Image (cartoon, rainbow, N blue to C red; front, side):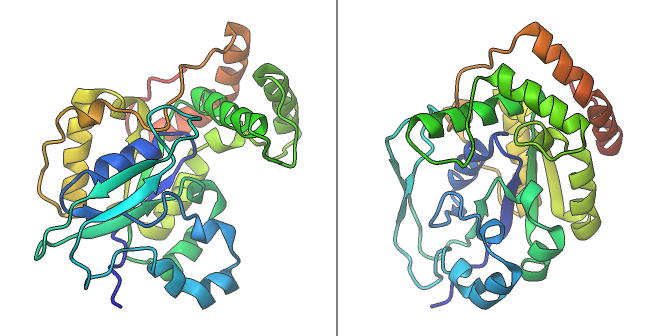
Length: 279
């Protein structure tokens, strides 16, 4: 069967709103979903495995032959941590031109741009970036939920301040950290742009996507980028998927993290050519 090749790839970053953006895109009448919410095919396997099994990846996407409606199970409901799966129905009209794509948030930090380019050289990349302090808190809270559910993470998750203080010391020693490191965006972004060029990557600031007025403009820009007609999403853009309550970080710890990220954020601002209103 002839599977539609993915046209777009939301590559991250972790805990920056990839779930919400993917649901917004799938709500467009010209977009069909991937069979899995976050396949992470390029992050889970070796280059040799990927080369030998790339057809398995392509089979995650809809076929051209089947013209009926599609449905998929979505584990990222509006509230983060809910055990309930949401069944999403996507209507498919015979004769309409469709595109498809996926969202694997680990890709930005864990996958080599050259590896993805080897298999998806024409893919259009989308990257979300969030205030790295709030991102770190959300990432930590996700692991707390996983640990509370009985998952073996291979490491112990304590309270946020204890874990972050330990990471600040590890970062000062030059070590890669679980929560702090993924919020250092600029170096990784430069590598992705070097591989794909600015013509194949769009950067979205998460805090702007959370603003319904700005979200409408963001979606229109993405529709132009992906070659789709503009769509009226109505109130759908006000929904947040896999969304948790706001962070609760002590002023002292937030100040420590703001000091750490200040130089990196300044470099990112200069690279993007826009002002970031982060901590």
